[in-house]
Length: 161
Image (cartoon, rainbow, N blue to C red; front, top):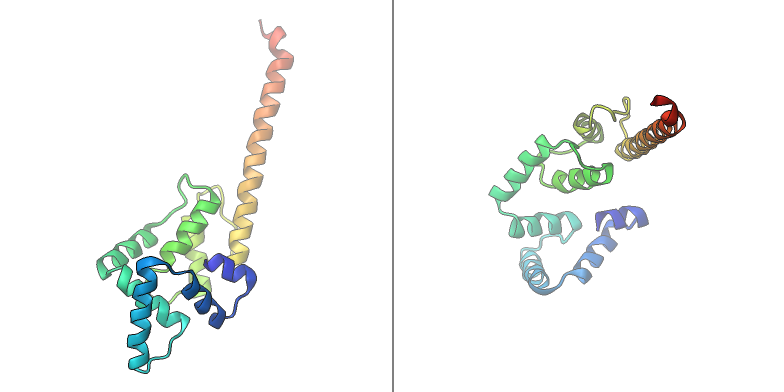
């Protein structure tokens, strides 16, 4: 959902309304009760308050801390760039310290495979896009190398005997 909001540049007020609209079943019931409690306490009902209360309800501390450890240890490994980005963003929600753009970029970049490491980019969206481009270029380069090798073998094949 966050990707949709970012792409459509939804204001926070609209995000909360849309999230509430999309809730179903137990989650919808749970949020209705949380909202009543917040209103009785005269707490402001914001997107951040929703995230905090909803995460608290559905992800106990032990689960959140475990996910935070996974986030801190996260590397791209054999994942595609899109899989790594999705996992990074998902687990980043469970990190308990405030995230600034530069730290996110450093963490993301340090988790990339050694053959894909864009240079000192401090804007997360730019870094992700540059890493995706590098991954595609590397895949094309490998494919071209394989095709050239095949053509060379096909061409020289009869002469190799």
